[in-house]
Figure 1: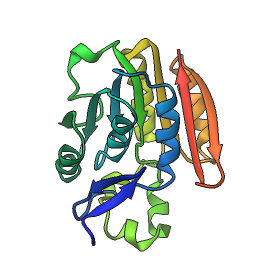
Figure 2: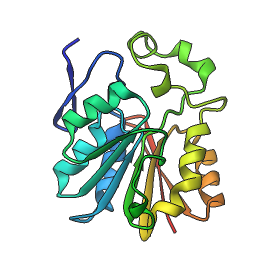
Figure 3: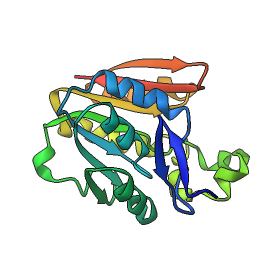
Length: 200
């Protein structure tokens, strides 16, 4: 309605149909920022409006790359962040020169099972793109694809930081372990937020 949303103290431009950043994702930003050095190569995967990338870039100078499959979201992200924004399917549009160089891969992929979307608040299920909500049969299809490719893109000391739900966190951690990374699950009751942080 307003054309913008507040997130981590930033005013984020939002167009109709674009996923509105949730307060719970501030927990994701907080933990990504703790492992993000000045000048770090950061990839904001499934970036939506670019809110997470914008919040991280406000913490300290970084080399920021962002990707989303939704053209409307990409248009917003290009307004909201000063970095490289790509339209496409997950890692596909990223330059190959980033392989093995990413310091922080921060991911807020859709993780809602399709049969649960009907129970979401109307402002989400009626006004946000289905592609920004639907995570596949168990909600973890997109996470699986991101996690499987993460070792190719992360640097030797790189970190994957991924938002998930409390009830899905054990499955998210298991898939990360299967990819050869070491996961740690962190939760915040106040924000109803859960993230998994993973390193080699």
